[in-house]
Image: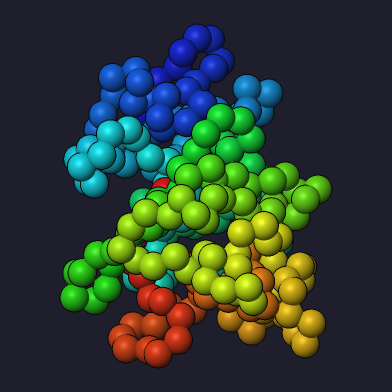
Length: 217
């Protein structure tokens, strides 16, 4: 991995700041979203090289072979899990620190078993703190892409403004049960979902949840 200190004990806030320093190679870098907390390592992707658009992206979720179990506890999703080299969830506490200030865009890239890719971009992406159950916010009307606007699919399945849920912390709007327990993953469930990128990983055809093996950045 690469450490690019700005000054003694301080590192870039995110991968975009690394890009502004002139570093434009994909890799694992050290960032420090909150100057009062320790720095951490993240995976960085150069958008110009990969998506023909400027800037650098901080990867907070990546899946490609299903070897990492995403049916985790509230605390595990808070802290993050997995390996930056393979599959991982960066951590809800880190997501809050990354998006607490400034303007952020969420990009989702999906790839199927025939190597066909689709993407979705949302502006004004934020994740609230734990006291607000890591609420997920974005501007659904600013969706751009060819994957479909699943985060704002319908009144019943609208992920914008929803709290995070896990099998041991149920914050969804499904009165009859726990969506996280039913779908085997932590996520921003409504009642229950139109999108669940942390769900069960199927190695082949399936008519339910989307199967993907590319990053959320």
